[in-house]
Length: 411
Image 1 (cartoon, rainbow, N blue to C red):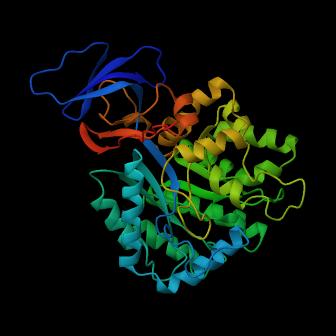
Image 2: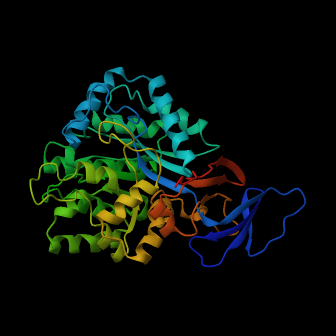
C-alpha cells in the first residue's frame, strides 16, 4: 500500500508512506507506486498514528437511561444506577453492546482501547463476554481489559478474591477505586492490595484514583510511592486524579515531583470529569479536572480518554477522540497555537505510552503499518473543524473510509 501526499504529524511538507507486509517500509516525498500496489491519495491531509482510547467502560456502555437517567449528574448516582442495572446484566447483553461500541470507535480511527470491567460482582458476569470480545475484534482493534472493583476492594464483600479471580481469568491490568472505600485507611490498603495482585500476576495497573473534588483524598501519593518501591513504574497509570484540582499548591508541587520520579501515567477524561466534577459546589464551581497543564509541563505522561459512552455517568459520546481533546484544551487552558497543534498526542502517543504500547506504535519505518488520515492539513485545523477520519489503515489493511460532508450554500 502507498499513501501519497500527506502531512505526517503536522509536518510542513507532504510525504508519501509505503506499507509492505504490514509494516512501514518507506517514508519519503514522491514515492513511485509499484505494479499493482494499492494507492491512497491523501490529498494533502494529516496523517497520524491510530487514535488510542485509553479509558472506557465497555460493560456499561450504551445503557444511558436504563433503568433511569442520572438526573443529579454525580458520580455516586451513576454508581447507584449501574448497581440497579446489574441484575439485568447478561453475557449476551454485555457482548452485544461492547461490539457495537467498538465498531463505533473503529469508525473514528481508534485501533487501541483500554476497557475497564466491573468486578464488584460475585458472578463476574461481564468479564467472560468481554474476554471473548477481546479475541473476536483483534483483527480491527486491540483491547486491553482492566479488572475494576467499582464498589471497592475492601468495602465490597470478597473484593480481593474477586480481583484475583479476574487476574486468573486473563485480564491485562488490575485497577481500584480507593476513594470509594469506606475510610481513608481502607483506601490506602486497597491500593496496596491491588499492587500486590499486579506483582503476583505480572499485570499492568490502572487505578480510578481520587476521582472526587475532595482535597483530603490522597490515594495518588500511595500509588506513586508503591510504583516507585515495586519497580512497576511506567506500568502504572492513575486515571482521573481530579482531587488534584483541589489540592493546595504546595502539596500538589510535592506530589507532582513524586509522580515524575515514579514515572506514573495519568489519564484525564475531560468530558466526564467536567460533567461529574464540581457538582457539590455552588459558586465558584471547580472544573473537576486534574492539573493537566502542570503535569505535562513537569514531564508526566498525560493522556485523554472519553471514559463513559452513553451510560449512567455520561449521557453523550460517540467514540470520537476529537471530543475529549476539544474539551480538554479548553478546560486545561491549552489553547496556545503550539499547544493546540500538539494536543493530538493526548490521544495518540501519550495514550499509547499509558497502555505500554510505545515500542510498537508510531509512523516509523519498521513499525506496524497502522495510521489514520484526518481531513485537515494539520491538527489545529482538524480540531477547529472537528474533521473526520477519512481512512483508517491497520497493518496495511484498509479498515474504514469516510467521505466528509459537503455543504452547498444556496444564496
